[in-house]
Length: 90
Image 1 (cartoon, rainbow, N blue to C red):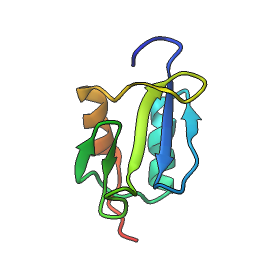
Image 2 (image 1 turned 90 degrees about the vertical axis):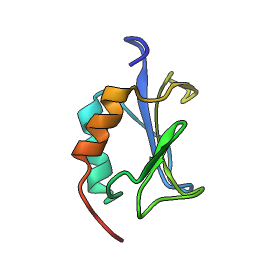
Image 3 (image 1 turned 30 degrees about the horizontal axis):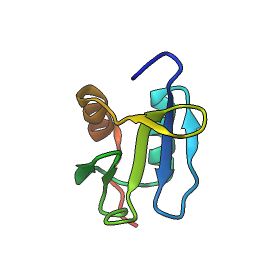
Image 4 (image 1 turned 60 degrees about the horizontal axis):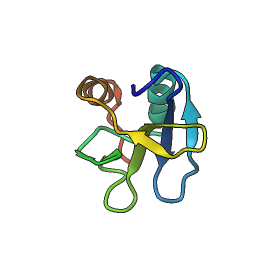
């Protein structure tokens, strides 16, 4: 996380809305509820899965209250995402 004021922003797919999360685990729970599937590759501010790839990927990053990106996830956070997402094919 960048600072104590940072908010975790998530968007599922290119037509999804940006949602804010104050707790990392809440964002993971949301991604599993949405059935995004497991990570197949990381991009600058997000990742791809079998269900969301190309321009239709998962955005996840730290930012301010206006959803402007401050930082992508660090290595430990990326590893937590990879180990926490459930396999799901839609």
